Every structure is written in C-alpha cells, then in structure tokens.
Amino acid sequence: MTITTLDGVLAGMQAPVSFNKSSVTPLAAATRRAYTWWYSSGCPGASVAPSPGINGATCVYGNADVLGALTRSNPTGGQSAYLAQLLALPTGQASTVLLLDRIWHNSGLSVTSTTAQAITPVAIPARDQNGTTNGLGVIAGVEWSSAGGAGTPTVTLTYTNQAGTTGQTATFTGVASPPAGTIEFFALAAGDTGVRACTSFIQSATRTSGTMHLCLYRVVAMVGSAVAGNAGVTDFFTSGRPQIYDNSCLQLAYINSSTTANGLFGTYVETQG
Amino acid sequence: MAITTRAGAISGLQIPTYVAKALAGDSQATNRLITSWYATGWPTAATANAAGINGQAVSASTYPANCIQRNNPPSGNAYVSDLSLSQGVNGSNLPGVMYLCDRLWENSGLSVTSTTAQAITPATLPARDRLASTNGDNVWAGVEWSSAGGAGTPTVTLTYTNQAGTTGQSATFTGLTAPPAGTMEIFQLAAGDNGVRAPTSFIQSATRTSGTMHLVLFRVIAAVAMTIPGRQAQGDLFRLGFPKVLNDSCLFFLFRSNSTSQLPILTGQYQETWG
Image 1: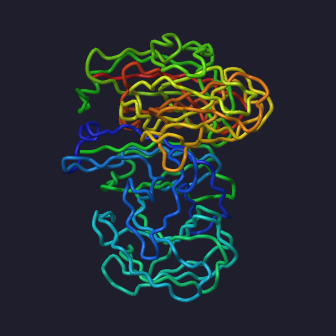
Image 2: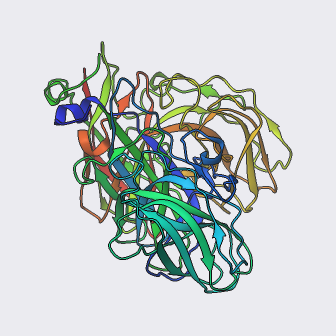
Image 3: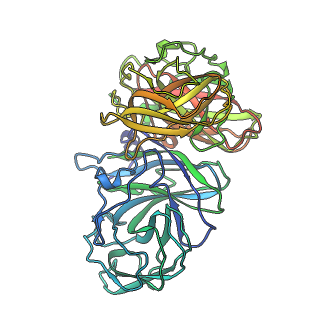
C-alpha cells in the first residue's frame, strides 16, 4: 500500500525517536567527504566496527553489527513506511545532516596494500531508490571506524552499476589522517547513477594505518543547518515523502563547513500506511 | 481509538496552555541541556524532589502545579497539535532546539562528593516509554542540578538495565565544572542501546564539591527549532509528527542552546487534540 492522502499521513504517524550523539571532529571541508556519528556515543549508543570480511554483509536493522541505527519497526500488513519528520541540530558548526540507509558494508580491506583486493559481494538488499536490488541511487564510500594514517592515494573501486554493467570504475583521492567517522565518497563513472555490487578495490599508495570499510548507502533525506546550533527540519512534504524500506539501517552523517567538533541532537518520525 | 483524519484532529482540539519560563543553566556542550523544571514562570517552578536515592516514578499528579498544564482525555488518545514558542527577551543564545519531554523518574540523595558506587534500587518506570511500556525504549537519563554544583570534572558513570532488559550496562559523561542550577547532563549509552529501563548504580571518578543533583529519566516527545530572538518557532500536527501524549504525562522542556551569553526567556503555547 501507499500513503496518498493527508489523512493517511496523520493516521500512520509512529512514536517519535529522539537521538543525541557526541562530537566527531572533522578535517577541512572537501568535496565528497562526510562524517558519520555511527561510531559516536549517545542515544542510540555507538555502533561497533563491522567484521563480515571483505565480501561484506547486507545491513539488516536489529543485527548485532548495526546496533547504532536509529530505532524503528517495520510496518505490518503490507503497509509502507515513509519519513514524516527529521529534526537535526548539529551542535558545533553549520552543516548538512544526511539521513542514510546503510545498505551493505565490509571489513578486512588492507589499508597498506597497493594491489587489487577482490570482492565477491553479498548482494545488496532491495533497498535502492526504487526498493529493488539494482542499486539505483546507491552511493559507495570508504568509512573509517578508527583513524587512518598518512597517505593521499587515488582509491579506485571497480563495480557493477545500476544497469548491471560490470567493470565500471569509481575513484576519489584519499585524505591524509582521516579521523574515525570519516566517509570518503566515490565519484562514479560517467553516466552511472548507482552501485549494485563492488567487485574490486585498489589504492595507488598506502594509507599507513587505521581501519576502513567499504560501505553502500542510500541518501534518504538531508537537512541543512545554516548556523552552528541551528536545527534543520524536514517533514513528509518538504522531504519529498522518501520511503523507508523494511529492515532499513538508518545512519546519520554530516557534510562539514569547518573543522569544529560537531555533535548532534534531534528527532525522527515515520508514518506508515 | 485514535485520530486518523484531519477532521478528527480539528474536532478534538483542546484549549491551548500558556507557557512562560525564565530558563537558567548551561547547555553549551554536546550532551548538556537546560531544564525548565526549576525555572520560574508558568507553570511554576518545581522544588527539588526528596524521594531518596531509589527514586520515584513521576506523573502529572506528582507535580500538579509544575508540569505543563493538561488533562487526560476521557477516552481515546491525546496528541500534540501545536507547540509555538519564542524567546523575545534574552534571546541571544539562539539558535537552539526546544525539547518537549515527559518526566518519568527522578531521585535525590546522591552524594556530590562521593567517588564510590552509590547503589540504586529504583522504583519501576511508569508505562510511558516510546511504546507506552515500562521497558525504557528511547528513555534518556541525565543528571539535573537543582542547586549549582561545585568544582570538578569527573567521569560520571551510570550502571543501568537497558530497554531490552540487559543488566549491567554502563553510560557515561564528563561532568561540567560548576554547573549552574538547571543544567541537565545527559548520559551517553552503551553501544547499541536506545534507552534506560532502570538505573542501578552511580559513581563519579572525582568529587563535584558541592551542590544538589538528581538522576532523572525522561522521554523526548517533540522538538522545535528556535532560530532568532522574537521569531516564533512553531510545530503543528505534521511538522511535529503528531506525537501521542500518554495519560499522566509530566511535561517539561529541555533547551539546547548555542551560547551561554544570556539566559532565555521562553514564552508560548502548548495545545493538544483528543480523539
């Protein structure tokens, strides 16, 4: 089913979920780099670094490796869930807060290797932009669960795109000494609009130390905070009614504007119907 | 019953309740908020509870003059239909966010100087967590100062039972030196937890010297973003997510400020719809 009326929005409102997270201190702002509160303490408590191995695992709400996800329940009776409200107050700086569905993650990538690291990935769940496994709107990033070391390599991901085309390549230039919580997003190949499967990973130089994970996400919503301490709010209408698929693992991250430490307060509400 | 239509929401609108509070405290840090609980105004300031270290479950009848004024619906459910707030005076600490909260449990008698474990055998929470149960789902824990604290920045650790019934979990924060009365320091929960069912022990790594503090459990019901002085922040049915207000809720505010330069004067109204 689908919510198609204002009354339907109202009737399906779920109990609000509040959250607070301790600060993540970013590096200087840069294109395609964000910082996640996934590993920060607060409510919900910090998540643990995933450990499924290099072939990864799908992220399913409630599993032990995604306990930092926002609290939620799947709708029953064939109903669908939608974002009804997201209020986010970044405490330290003007920033854009991203509500992500964490779809897939891995572990075991060598941070020092400069040879290809093959991945035979577990298939992503049916949580892309259209609720399928195709990967439309799914973005890939390297997420640091513990701080990285020196090195600014070109990082290249070989992947299958949203249309099923294999052997596509995406890249970014790594930042030196990324703090825990850093996400470096890949720039996809020309014409691509999502990632279905990651098949190989290579760095042009070492990153020396730290622990990183390849992750796939879908951006569910975002809210802007123009001034430090100013809360951004979006609702069912202004967010464009994004659907929250069953088993979604909702994760919060931000795109920074300065190097000031940034914590988070806020609330999240779904409507189901 | 439940309200499932806009017509139902309009039909059930109740008379708005006026709110005016002169807040005091310090929230200029992550995981620190200002409570309206001891602030003068309307509703009137609460006096510090004397429930003892094992605490008491809190409902509106515990503090009939100090919670935001409301009644339980004779049948059906209550929802927040409007929350309109502004800071027309001393608003230079904006922007910030105002949380509407339900106070669930509180205690007294915690030693501010002790560095040994202070055991708690808590009274059970009322059935007012996120899912209207006593489990503690999305229930936060904080230390609330009813009179100003003294010097000391200890690590403060709470041992608790989480929302799933797991005992022996640990939550922490680093204390603020000399916290003003009205400061609420929020515990950061253990990995994977999303709420507190029962606090069982409290310990500080160093003295806080003086003052009076209370362990408080509460749940956030709604939030509104406050931007600039004099500008009304408003949340309606849709903007607030139509949150349900459970019977006997003891409502108060927690404010997260962006500055300690001046203390906020909060005015506004709270309104429910029933059905």
